[in-house]
Amino acid sequence: MREYPVKKTVKISNSAISEILKSYNMDFEEKEGHIISSYPGLKKIELWTDGKKLYAETETDMEYKNPGETIKFFNNLLEKLTGYTSKERKKLISK
Image (cartoon, rainbow, N blue to C red; front, side):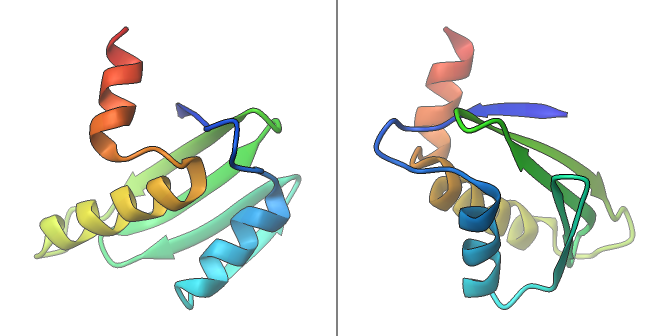
């Protein structure tokens, strides 16, 4: 499980997560406060929030042939959800 900080200007909630997944035309289900989906290269993406931080748990599909595309997608998804780019997230986490 990974924990991601969320910009103060970004309102994070399960409904906001759902709307962003819908904008990517992704199927998902909500179970016990967690939103569960998948994407080529990721067997499972499980997202949830406490209102201040985003939590994500992923399961990688080792058979998938284009991991670069999956990484790019996941970084874009996290940027939409948290408001931070991958460089900004790395800098915050390394503090």
